[in-house]
Length: 447
Image (cartoon, rainbow, N blue to C red):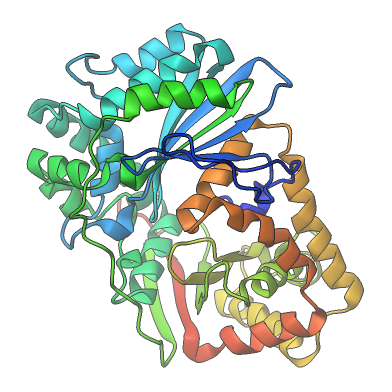
């Protein structure tokens, strides 16, 4: 499930930041509980001390996702994520998770279009286990050919269940492919089925060697830990892993859209469904804050404009939402989506969504409505403040977007949004010529 940054970031106390080479002098930079270090091989380390409970989380973020994959090999990053649990010469296949669980911890990973992250959460006195295991698989992954073949089949089945057998997710994929023509956001993170089937051991090995190196990674450790102790351990385990200097950058940019695109998907389903997406800039562009507030005004709970109009008053939709997905490395999208109520026409649902957009274009929302939306966004920051996992995840996510300190300007930008800003960005970006629309038309099963 996609989570917006406003659902995860929170506010923590200010303390200094440190840079690590051979333990360089401290820099007096205003921060939010993060100590920053950098090893000579380029590995960046962020440490957050939080001593409320004797637990810790250890996360390794790699700057590689579906946007970094070559044409014809979509799903490469996601399959490599699976293979990272398949063993090294030191720890055999599937031993990684067994070792973590045996020590009372939990571990997992996820891949996005922009990055891949691995984490463990465990008792803080076991944090050395994470350091040893992650350093080992950063440089010694085996990638056995038989394991690759088996895991490739697992991912193909995952794709079949999550997308090809799910009509709404299938429509989502079709809309993304139509909205992005020249940028690699065109293909899904999990990959197209034929591309997954074509991935071989050498494809994974080359991808691993290109992107799984210290200079392309960030470690975030948070919890009941001591920064001086953790950075010394990290230097011992990761400090001798060599950097990679010949990594290919992503240079593709999406061309300006100059007319509405529409696609229709006929698939076995219960009810009609629609998605409309608009190209928008990503955070920290100046307009990103107003777009975030616009999304909350339209779809921030049952009292929001879209729910109140389409679901509660008109009763033409079972659900409807808007979402600004602007926390991506490259410009992404603003979403509108809805499921028609039984017996209702999806075209009426679609037009009603556009009517709500036109209202905001013609008349700015009230100060009270804007303040409520800003309060909702800010409150979601605060709700995560007791979770060490989310403290680490937010720092890592912003680092993937450019720099972890960007999170400090996020709430300030939201607070500065005015009603006229919301109306202005709706006019600027939520335009018909900038829109890609997908319609799901249910068909009866042929079985």
